[in-house]
Image (cartoon, rainbow, N blue to C red; front, side, top):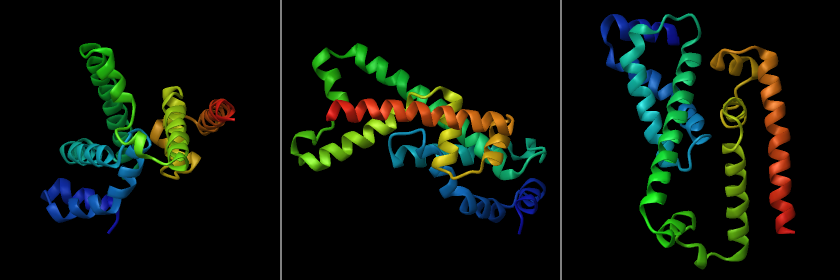
Length: 191
């Protein structure tokens, strides 16, 4: 059954099975999108649940001017961005309400002292990559994440972001250049 048929069944008959089918069809893709914006799989799963709640509550408003998947991915991106902003606000509040010693503990992994050097280096490299991606301007971050984590085509990204294809190409190009510079700095510091 197509997405359009499932949406019509849900809207017209409040069909729970049709909604479950949509969730099963897109859940992993939504989680992957959320992973591009969050620090953990659990957080991405929580956001994806919020995405599907929003979809269920808003499905009657969906005008079907774009593909269901495009609409769904827009919601996932927006929910992820909002969750990231809220997490940053909470961290700032925690940093300013605790003394400096406790605040520094938030930034150091609990098991950092027990990790072998190779694992620590790999973890540091991954953290540097995640930080570099998070530091990109918002539109570059979104375009890059949708392309690399969700493997959406440039055309699909243009639809999700509601921008031109050339704008997507430019955003991803600039994101790659920026990431190369930031990661080069990271690896040069290690050398």
